[in-house]
Every structure is written in structure tokens, then in C-alpha cells.
Image (cartoon, rainbow, N blue to C red):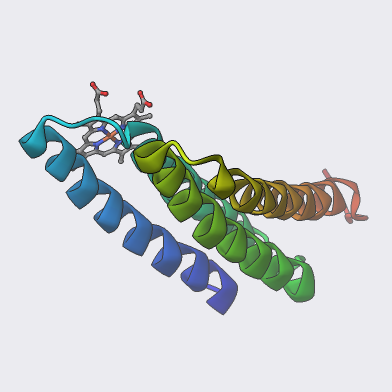
Length: 130
Ligand code: HEM
């Protein structure tokens, strides 16, 4: 597996472990205020990162390593910015967290756009057959 895929999976597994413990805590305290932040940590931090990592593992011979690492770091910074800002916003209802959340969201979208580039690059690359 290329290192970039391992980095995606390492980040994903840390996110889902935090997300699961967070979910258990919500259940134990019967307080679901932060459920959307828990959901986004798991879906953006675990599911999406694992899909990115899988794609780059499947295309290890043809991918652009530079594009893959850009995808990784932008998505990582996006997640680290967006999820805590969302949790702070939900728990305080203070709109000062919204601009920070938006920065994280924009970076998360840019991460996905870079991934889209990698996917279409793979689709249209020249092949000997098929
Ligand atoms: C130990 C593992 C987990 C526990 C204990 C847990 C617990 C919870 C709890 C208590 C809620 C709130 C339910 C409510 O509002 O009535 C919730 C919501 C949710 N969880 Fe988890 N969860 C876990 C793992 C995951 C994973 C792995 C994912 C996704 C990959 C996920 C995605 C979601 C989603 C999408 C919601 C709905 C959020 C919303 O309504 O805003 N959860 N979870």
C-alpha cells in the first residue's frame, strides 16, 4: 500500500475511534446536541478518508503522488478545522464559530475537487487495452 493510502487510513481510524467513543458518550449522557458533529467526524473523517485511501491504493501504479498528498493534507486541515468548529457552534450557538466552520467546509470541498481530478485523470489516462 502506498504511504499516502496508509496516511488516509491512519487518519480515518483515529477519527472513527474518537467518533465511536463520542457516540457512546452521547448515548450514556442522553445528550444528542453534538450528533451532527459526531456524524460528520465519522462520515468525513472515516468513510471519506478510507475511500480516498482505497482509491490511491488501487491506482498506486498510475496515480499522481503529488495530487494524492495534496488531497490528503487539504482534507486533513479541512476536517481539523470544520468538525471542532461545528461542535463548538452546536454547543454554544455562538455564530462567531461559523466563519471558521466555513473555512473548514471550503477546504473539505477543495479536497474532494482534488480527488475528482485524480479520479478523472485515472479515467482518461491512455491504456494499452480495455
Ligand atoms: C460506537 C459507535 C457509535 C456510537 C455509539 C454512535 C452513537 C450515536 C448516537 C447516540 C447518535 C445520536 C442519535 C440521535 O440523535 O437520536 C448518533 C447519530 C449518528 N451517527 Fe453514530 N455512533 C457510532 C458510530 C457511527 C459511525 C461509524 C457512523 C458513520 C460512519 C455514524 C454516523 C451517525 C449519523 C449519520 C448520525 C445521525 C446524526 C444526526 O442525526 O445529526 N455513527 N450516533
